[in-house]
Length: 570
Image (cartoon, rainbow, N blue to C red; front, side, top):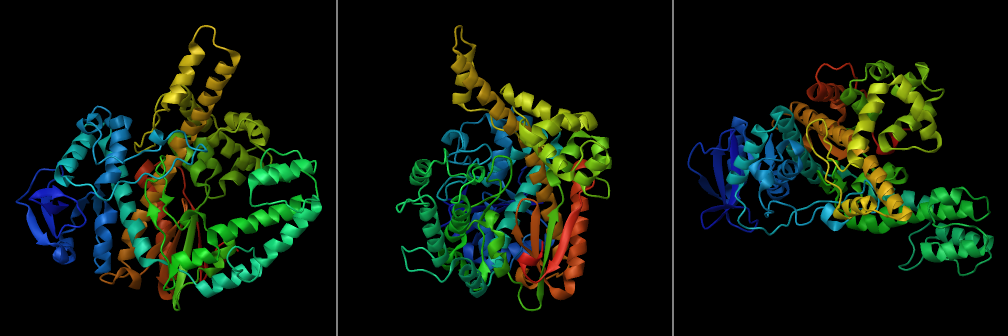
């Protein structure tokens, strides 16, 4: 059974957050009404949801962020939902539903106000931006939208896969709000101690911490420039060039290639500057309250399906401050990360049995070395990353032919995805999330290169754009499917954790508190830590079977039970 949730505005199904009544409508799997809609006062909404949860419905609403926080504030946890906005974005773009009524409809308030493609090319290939809808739409009918979505799925070549993707995406929306609600335990005093150890005491506004000031003195002395400003990339490049250091940027990889007394203090300064800016004292003031950091995740915020973070830097917590993540008294963290997730995903998608054998019951990269394909684990890793991200130069380019001979099915799979991208075609993940089409500028560049008499510069520009987009589609299929696996892993684990504390509020039983692409953190009573660790491993095995069936590919996870996050990989 499905129950659509909408806010009452003159009797219509809408989702205005400020309205004082909620309409609940029971639906069947196709979106047809099972009875008359029922209107309840908004302050009764949590009670009505809790009462109906006993029937294990799937709640259908426009945006989990709009409805779920109110429920959690009343200790009401829902088992399942359909996040219509997230599902709408998938179905609008999927090649599997391209001929559906939903995909062919004009742009509506269900669509994000601006997608990454409309904003132009991203600064880097995979920083594709956060997609969010407005919070003030009116006139959104969840019942009609659900009907259109179900019809689109029913008409897809493989509706089961697409249904699984939508269920996983919606489960992720619940998990994201639950992690924000529960919060990641964070000891602000310990964070301050870590900052003082690294930077010195907290400076006055507008001043640098003591350690950064010391490094600044070293930098200026090393290049004999009393005005050098390492906080300004443009000015710093000029200062370095005046000192005879030929650089075009302040990228740390470029700086590290030069031998000069300024390089070591400069790199140290940049590292501390990043820490101060991203997770310094101002971060503590802004993001830590009541002993909790409450990350604001954006499911599906990246075009591949990966999550993004809306402030707080939840997906970029540096190791220097993880010692401030300390479990509550009597509680522990269970920290787990999936080993070599993306290459294992590639193995399963391509059906490469030789690579599956290389990763059976051991580290995949060690297995590749043992097979004789390459000589060191470092070469195996850089070669596989090159295959998935399109590295054709340096060590990755040198390793690729060896991997292609040893694992032809896997390498052929990503090469085909790259070829499709270079031709301007769409590629899709295992469950059916499709890549966007190249931008209008990209197509214009290709058209210009085909014109008679096109200059060498025009042709080179078009070729560079083709290869760049091919690198994107090459990785899209792998990274996107890895995101699907991670969602399935978390969704399965979430169900298992509920059973370890039936009837208890979210914060009083084991619960997810942090997620980073292929790594999760569970906060659990210490007495249940070993049980939770076993459930984490079992959920990973379930996710592999759910996506790929009986293929002989393992998805092992490394699990640590610790009282502070920094000890997980000590």
